[in-house]
Length: 258
Image 1 (tube, helix red, strand yellow):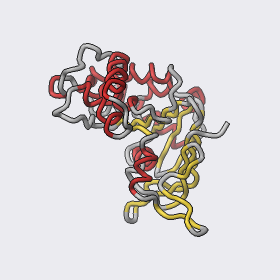
Image 2 (image 1 turned 90 degrees about the vertical axis):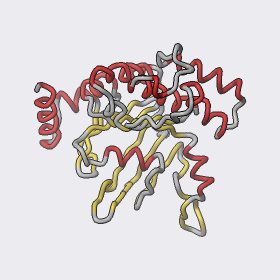
Image 3 (image 1 turned 60 degrees about the vertical axis):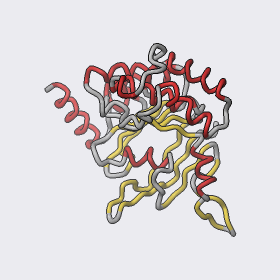
Image 4 (image 1 turned 60 degrees about the horizontal axis):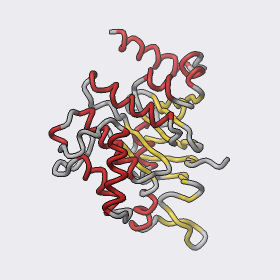
């Protein structure tokens, strides 16, 4: 089966710092890939590059076999025009650390805006889908609430519904619980568990190790811009092969226990 998402030798630099160092990654249909690693390891840069929020400096990224961000031209490649990039990004949705909701829109309108304005769906279709999605994330009674009237966990669940509303081929999550108070984390993780169970294709960057162990089909450990180790949760958490991963898990375990 061809991967939904394929990264071949992807490199990203910020000045003299190499944030991604020749990263190779395939994500197959319905797979939940969870990315873990220390701060500065390249986890967030990885998903930001896939969503084309950051241009890459080397390698290639493919969505269903289509090269992302570039097009063939005179025997080589050149960057896509903004219109072409925007068309590709419609097939990818991302949920950020911060909720990034429109503060002057209700929860319902936050979810319907992109389907109507970007994807050209009718108001009736967008509203119907948005109501179903908000109910799916447990906010059917908050349709007409504004972000200021919602808790952080509720705002992040609106953001997840908004990401689903565009019917993406792949969902990207960049530390979706990092901005939440501890008591609100579980309600967002519960939604992610449901989405994983529904067979959506997902790449989740997180520091929630218990969630990664429970939900992931495959866990990726990154350090210094590289994928150091990858495998099923039972292997990555139960029998890590690299000293760097063992040290990371030990450190994280100590932090959680204190």
